[in-house]
View (cartoon, rainbow, N blue to C red):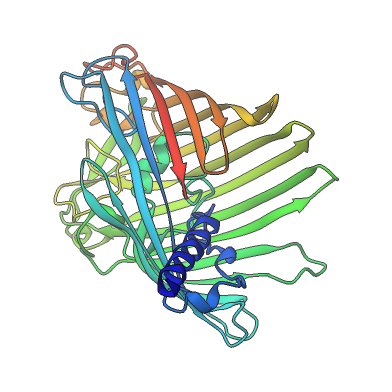
Amino acid sequence: MRSVIIRFLSFCGLFLITHSAFSQRYLSDYDSTLFFKDTLRPFLKRFENLHFSGYIQPQFQVAQSKGARSYSGGDFSEFSCNRFMLRRARLKVDYILPAKNNVSPKALFTFQFEATERDVNVRDMFIRVFDPKKQTLSLTMGLFARPFGYEVNLSSSYRETPERGRASQILMPSERDMGAMITYESLIKRKLPFFKFDIGLFNGQGKSGPAEFDSYKDLISRLYLKPLSVTKHLYLSSGLSLLQGGWRQATKYKYEMNIVGGNAMFEVDSSITNIGDKAPRKYYGADLQLLYKHRWGKTEIRSEYWRGKQPGSAISTTNPGTLPGGPVYIRQFDAAFICFLQNIFNEKWEIMAKYDWYDPNKKVEAPDIGKTATNLTAADIRYNTIGLGLTRYFSGNLKFLVYYDIVRNEKTLLTGFLTDIKDNVFTFRVQLRF
């Protein structure tokens, strides 16, 4: 009987630990609630440094047309305009090696995997080692989130909209990459505001490829000002991000934009020295968040802007997972994400509106795309997306979401893009988090 009681209390204690250790709001953070004192610890020696969290997102979607290409969870099948799917189902395990005081970490090992009807794959696997004295410095190595931008690092379990913007998915596919990163995070409140600075080197291809395919690395950094109280109810936070990198060019053909005879077009540089050179990948980002708390909840505005250079192919600007073998096309892009969140009635109801755009080639206008001899393709078309949604929170663990994406592409001279494509998507999602 005594052994049964001990096992029961151990299970309850483990449940309480996992219940309190929700997924982190930001992908690059660790959950400080993993460190706490509990009267059940004598029964939990085997599990005291092991913590579980996760979430599941089943959903139903309806597209505007069959076979719609979409960034709202992936393209639809050729003969389908509606589907049930597990968008995400993830389990995360954190192992903590505590410091001598037992209330702060000496090292953290994180493993997160995803299992859906489509596949099973690893999302995170890294170790983070902390400065044992002040805890302000840490070193992270393995597979983890790139420290660029606000939206990329906001966890999918906390993000109010179903998906990240089009630019995030194209330029930062899977959000993660193999690399090493040093972090400084101010923990003691002084005259200066709280801030966090990340800087790291990454392979570059992220999870979209099986392994590093060249010797070039991406340098990525972000300076983040943590929420600062401007007035009694108003809070401000912001960040600056930088990415400097690229990948090996396999051929001598490099196309860059120029104006010839009054027309914007790609011109080729076929110098033999281009072979093995770095195709430049340079991103610059800035973000700002404003939060106003009131008696029935909150009002929040988030804004983010990116611009820079992106190498690609004639038909794609997606960051490659394997070494591209064809000619390189260098494009100057910009993108933005603007999100408005508003509680209505109380904190359990929230409406949202989001606007994002991705312009892969700022050097051209819509009427230029499709002209003879310009070498411009569908990869140069700008997209604007407006999303409208409503969330019902039943607790900190459970929520229902309805959301509608209105997607608009530029009207060009290209066949298939003479008018707007019918690719709007409606999403109904249930999320349970533990």
